[in-house]
Picture 1: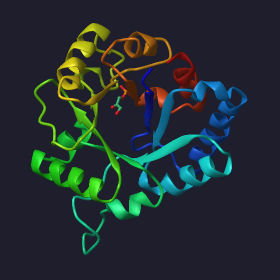
Picture 2: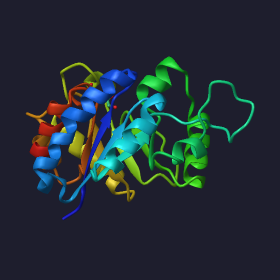
Picture 3: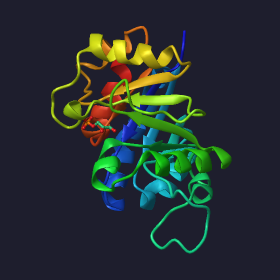
Picture 4: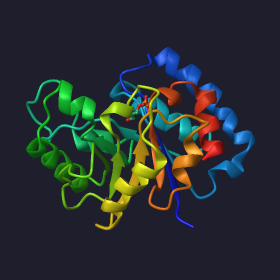
Length: 220
Ligand code: 13P
């Protein structure tokens, strides 16, 4: 059986105080450690919280990985406001690249995204590359994709598991691991993860509550 990826994208939410509350709630998952079997759990908080999350998981022996939601397309240098791949790698192993919110709000082009992928891989970060449909261009060396149709993000209106599976299949045929994202919650997660071509989920809103996120992991 393949491992399931359960990824939380906390987006631009949570102060440090709020993140500490989330972590204390989430820690209770340890009462039921078998939920981790065959799963890769990954939390992607804001840059300001990477160190807090990564230290907390280590100190509490939680088998949970940390990732960033973005990365500079440049190496270290005079790029005011950017966080580079080497800095992220101190705390995390993954990075979300190409989210539709970055493509639309920050005008990230395919060329910029390609640089982000290249530089992330050079620093040992695994990109979780977001695609919006079957035709989204995918950089060659990316191995994990998240299919996130724009209409399903934050809308409470997920894609059908059948359609998501069909889109996933088109990328599985190109040897990619494909996750689904868009209005995933504890009630509908199983309908996606039981599909042949979907190997996990990328969760936004429903991951903001630690208890809700535990339910997602349990129900996957
Ligand atoms: P929602 O789960 O809130 O729809 O967000 C999905 C998403 O954008 C995850 O990256």
